[in-house]
Image 1 (spheres, protein in one colour):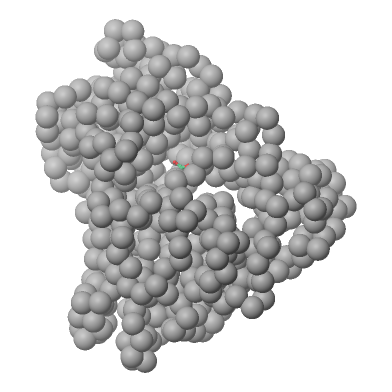
Image 2 (spheres, rainbow, N blue to C red; image 1 turned 180 degrees about the horizontal axis):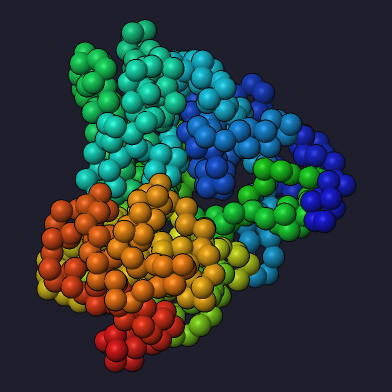
Length: 511
Ligand code: CS2
């Protein structure tokens, strides 16, 4: 219905179609060259990095146009190609949208079909920066140790077919190899995913991979490669058909690649580049020598709270983050978790007021315009838990400080991945480890014909805690942590999510 209504508008193909009042690229998109190759041109990149670049190009016409690469799906390429890679960013608040048409993406490639074109771009001397938002699982790493999964099917493929890669790591190394052979400097590789010390981890993955295929290349990358760490932030929910219609009505054009986001944005990058880089500071990007305090603050407070809201909120029947935040008990729970269990583990970054940061954060979560689904955030928990919740627990355990609220979040994840909600309805669990979870549920007998078997909860939680790729050997064997999780999970089964939250707030205990 809405799709049909949207289709009545002419397609966004050129800035000429846009009304004068719509902000649009004021630079010469034709003559400017590509200087950045970006892997993972999903909604986040289009609402974050590409927007910063659009602003830079608007005042300083350098050759910093973007070549976006999709590794898995051709959807973005197919949406962007007919639009000459133009698309709209709608910053949304409860008062409405503020639209801007973005022009910094010059080309979009679908790697499985345009492998040679991607490699050519990487090998081009004009390419100075290769950035990535490929999500946690795109790194083919062990989430707990950060090591390369050498038996991952994509990595095995890329080791056997090093000139025809399919994984991001395989492409990065194949591109660096071409440059090494051509006597060109390496490009800077900038990870923009929500992973701890993302640049350092990616460097290690690239080195582990290149060591297998070519020790000389490996040495060159080790000596000359630059892999700055970065912290990225902007909430970007998935776009719906309703959103597309409302944007078409405002734009008077149909935009299949439009994205919706909050007004807030932040990007902090470690100052470590191999060759040139765009004038990032001119548009508010912070360059720093020490990224860790920024990254831990963001991963633990924002993403940690997000995952907590996702699992507990989903179980409590909240579809959107903002719905859960309207529930004053839920809100209080998240605030207390931040103050009592996360903040003590953080080192405050220079010029940040943590109390202000948390207040702003809760207001961002409350943004009712955003319709950010708890289910969307709940995806890929096995890849997210270590840096969002478990590193915080580690620090709390080490200093003998409380972690009961985070334990409830972890228990809620364990409950969520059972694939049946508290009302007996099926949950679509999307996670690279979902098959393992199903086997564990079956073997431990926690779930029989979609019904929870309470007596088997201890063996179920034990089997999940034994997944060292998530919990690491340390937490898997930490009796304080394991006992607390098992107790919390059993209580969560008995009391369900809403009462469990209330009990933890009112009595600071689970019963
Ligand atoms: C979210 C993040 O989907 C998720 O897992 O927690 O995408 C979050 O919205 C961003 O990191 C915000 O910067």
